[in-house]
Length: 325
Image 1 (cartoon, rainbow, N blue to C red):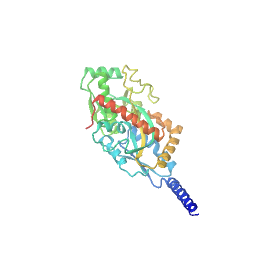
Image 2: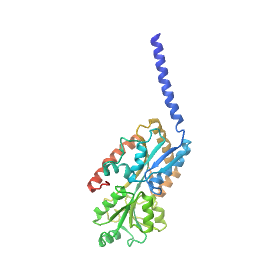
Image 3: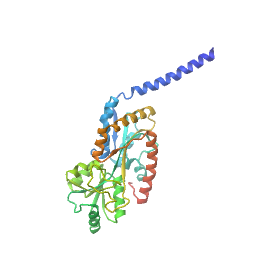
Image 4: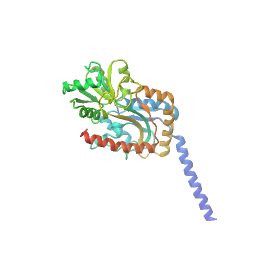
């Protein structure tokens, strides 16, 4: 009899625990959620956050606030989320150049891409566009390379910070073409584009969303894209390979992470809701028009992908001898 009561009591405890977990999941979220963007407003990272924030707010029944925290090449925003309470209310819109590049570029970035974050969902991927100020005396990639060789050290290029993917892309471009360009770092893509429009800098290798509208308005020139195929949003712009520059292939990606230790049921809920959002035709169209494409992964797939990208970009950065310190 006593043994039966113990078993009965234990089963009740198990059921109560399961019910408690289900109740906790059902209650999430009870208050606004913040998506931290480690860049200034106006770039592709910011665009991607705003692409999902409103539909995610509708799906979850709570406000989803985009909070831009630029600085230190993304390390400030990443640190904020890495140190946040793992309760699903503070999330990171990660940019690949920071997420898998910074750990190799900084001796002390202040966060670890594997230990400090729980993968939630892949969002979008984008090639880079080599954009130039409107007054630059070059209208395609071949003319740019010829002009740069004839005027060594005269041209400069912007990036969203030391060690960013734009910085790495610029140094790789110099290596592949044998040209000399001066690096000008900014705190995010937005300010860099503004100075490119104003003619303060000559070139900017960035994601299409940051420049596509200005290119279509003839305020900037797009000289090449770094993907293997042309962009739907800029079909007239040839790839680097089509222009005679091989091995200049760069893809950026944007994904959502939570602080490590965030409950698995919350991570799965967010992944499921974001999956529905990314499947919507209007969201896919908006992404494509900006020069990006949506891509979905499970949390486990994103975790494995992050590890592989971390290894790959580590080898690229090391071979180019790039450091942000």
